[in-house]
Image 1 (spheres, rainbow, N blue to C red):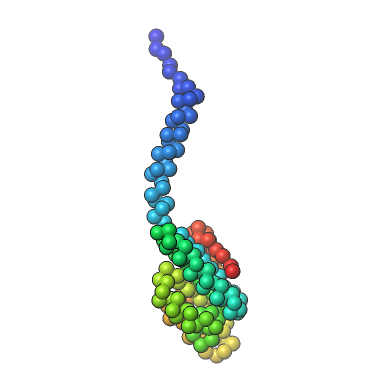
Image 2 (cartoon, helix red, strand yellow):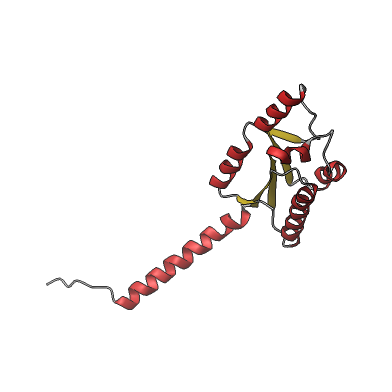
Length: 155
C-alpha cells in the first residue's frame, strides 16, 4: 500500500520564504547595476526656473555620486523653455557651457517642434548651445522616457 505524503503548512511557508529570499538575492545585483534615471523638463521662459533645473541636476548628480551610484539626467526643453538651450539668448548660457563639461551624465534635448516655430517666426534657425540634441517632439520624448521608467520632474 502506497502512502501519499502531504506537505505541512509549515513546510510550505518555509519553501515560499526560501524561494523569495533566493529570488531577491539573484535579482538584487541586476537592479543595483541599473543607473537612476531622471528627466527634468523646462517649458517656461523663466531664468529662475532654468537655474532651478540646473541646480536640481547638479544636486541629484552629486547625491548619487556620493553613494557610489550612477544617475542619468536628461533635460528636455520645449515651448518658452527652449530659450535655455539657445546660444544667442540663453539667460544661463555661461553656466550651461560649464555644466556640460563638468557633468557628463547630464544631457540636454531641444524640442524640434518648438525650434521649427521659432525658426518660422524669426526667419532663421537660432543656434543651439554645444552638445544639445534635437528631439522631434519634446513632450513625446518625455512620455517615452516616462514609459521606460524614468522619473519625470517639472521644477
